[in-house]
Length: 435
Image (cartoon, rainbow, N blue to C red; front, top):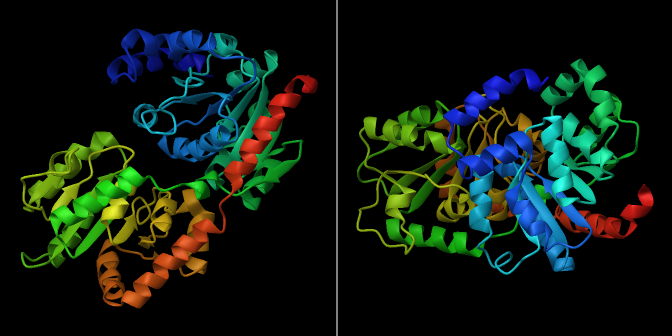
């Protein structure tokens, strides 16, 4: 199936900005040849744990597991593969953190496209003992190549949205044999486990809480956020997080109806995708507001000569916690329009007042749980965010209650990363006996 798309994939590759150098990126994506892994493989001993997380959201969940692996066994060997440029860029920055700075037994690489020759070569390149696929990464040739090379395949933090479930069900004759090659599926909720079983998975499906519940505070991001907050000297900071195409204009229109020069408030807009940073900036400029970007206003040293704008565009990747630390009240982007929403858990961790719309179907159980525990507010229109949010912020007890409930919601569901780490580390001792 993917082979028929080869000409399109080559053209698309040539047209887009590369994740690594042209040659390295091309060779690993289309042929599974990884110069980095071949080099690192000489350092690795046996029992390599391979984790694949496609994009930034899945990577941030996987990191909680990886951190636990190294807390339990500093000498374990881990390879993380990603697919998207944003995930790759985020990990390059993250590798400089204290947790990974002195690790020689951790490597990040791009996952090849699902061509049989590419996945076969890639698997043989570093010979892992186990592959842990995060969420819904069911790639036929990748899984078959692993089984051919006696690599155990696990699907962890497994998720099947209603849309994905119906897609796989419609192609059941093709996907069912692939899914049943997976040695172990651990779902992130009961609903997900039921969908895997209904799809025809013929082994037991276990359930552990979503890895994203284990997200931790990044102290440097929090410090930078508080620095920005002190620098802009505004009483209230509104944050629209992970906005999608068309949302910025509507939010800005609502801001125009609310804004006055005397108002001691600022709006931060953080688009979901980096390629839309400039478009969001232009929308705010066309509306006639004073506008700045995170990269210009809040420099590395936290000093800016510019006056605080009325709208700030968050034009950086992987700094959600910084924007949250600077804010008072948060709107989850992609939830008022039918985009599926975005992960609200980092906002919970920082005890923010959280708003979202009806379209949180990518985070359905989390959003429903937040509403049921009075930890978030569901709205229908962008203007409701400003109207209802203003009333809540006037009542300190009420806003504190929402923040505390949100924090308790995430904390009482944490702990799955430790259980996954134990499972993967114990499995390394038993892996050879399974074949």
